[in-house]
Image (tube, helix red, strand yellow):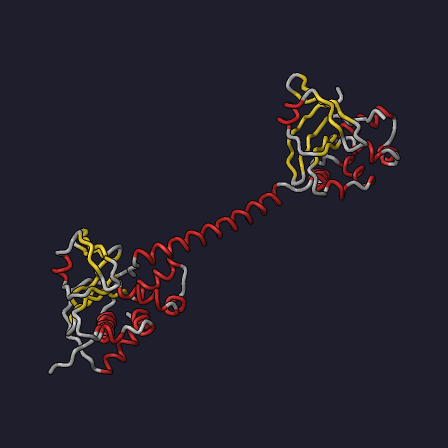
Length: 357
């Protein structure tokens, strides 16, 4: 009585034959080859070295399906190549070890590659447009596209490898049962969403930090720029000890006089910059330029005309809109609005504001 060759051994034998053919020629061609399987041990050893189905063999071992595929059958086995498994692992974001460890899922996937009857290439082609039950027992979809047999999304790349208990078709993709594909799809979607949210949050934080420094940092950067601006304002903030305050959480709205505005004030008062910085009311003068809260130009225009309290003992500034421009206390005009900061906003003005008291 002739000894039956199991699918397990057939896969190994086919791997050896593919490897041998590859060693004979560097050209890649598609041929139809009829092979006689053999159970010779040395052949199996060579097949293992070839490694064409090493992942499938490991999966069959892990799922303890060797005896099943050595049974009477008949079976049709749709056998994914190692390259197919590698692509599946990458697409699913899992490692071979993770799949092999989940024997329940692994068994379901492997049985989804087995039909309970022997179907050669002609029989499979005749099933074009059909849904065929597997041993899973969920169905696979078979379609013939441009002369090629497609099984779900995989292609039958080598058909009719005959064994005593059935037939093997080599395919270039791993088939996932619909329920497992759905479960993995949901898990992947949730993971992708979490990663995307994390990435977006990190990117937003980084962008915000990069684009929106604090009010004090903006003043310092401008003072160090070329051309320099806010040099007197920075010196005043440092002298009054208000830098930390404007690095604080806020939010604040700051009406920031230019260096030219301070120069005009010094000329008007007949004092030097050093004398201004020595003024005991310096901190109050600066706080009179700060409003609690973040008010963009549109917000300022919307509330005008209005008297808005400042951080200087609730002394107010009078805001009005004149010829489309925002004017403060009838003396200072906003010349650059909405300089955004992480802790508020700066409106650059062309005059220094003086508290009434």
